[in-house]
Length: 302
Image 1 (cartoon, rainbow, N blue to C red):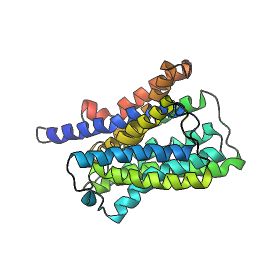
Image 2 (image 1 turned 180 degrees about the vertical axis):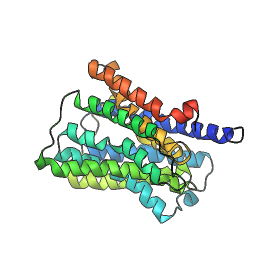
Image 3 (image 1 turned 60 degrees about the vertical axis):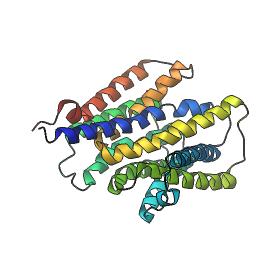
Image 4 (image 1 turned 30 degrees about the vertical axis):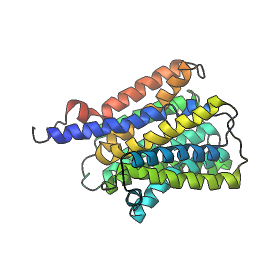
């Protein structure tokens, strides 16, 4: 037991660091709503530019060899840029071609998919237990209640393009998160390069698809800055560390806390109302997270 304790502690610490991303993503809805009428792809380009500048500043402050930091394997570039940009591209495509409730519900399959995909990782044979699946399932139920407001949803054939884009969105982020574990030798600060590439691609999409609308007040500019520093900046760095070195099954199930915490933040700022749906969702997501983290909280039993 003593031999495994240091490794278990290291895994628990990395998982906790990864969960910081979930906490930061809880601010995403509030900050996005505070940016005014800035179009989606323009907002992605602006916020990822802030994240890129912050990452470059860190490299300069620490005396890092920037050229060496950007000299990554082609597959790492493909995975990192594809994950960050692909998720946002398909999410916005889904919202353009399907009702927001149904599109968001499908897109929020990604935590459950992370739990399922983790069983395919090398050395993970037999690592996926019923409590991981049950925990992720409870989280999905809670997230579904929050997204739908406790009301039923009706999927209609004319929105199949949007539904498909939402599913690809979920698959993109879950695949990125799980496959990142295969690139454990790539430092987490390499996310700076992925942010730079995402900012460029989002800017191109903005120029092709949207009209430019700049923030109208200082508060909206501050919201863009806060997005780039937090939910669209630091969050991706700590998430990378968590999925590479933490318990990815626990992180996947615990990610359903993000819509719950986001709703609580909106309630606190008067942008949403509390009710029975919020209470039931809170119980389901909390129970699911505790169940999925059973190994870490109580130790694995034979």
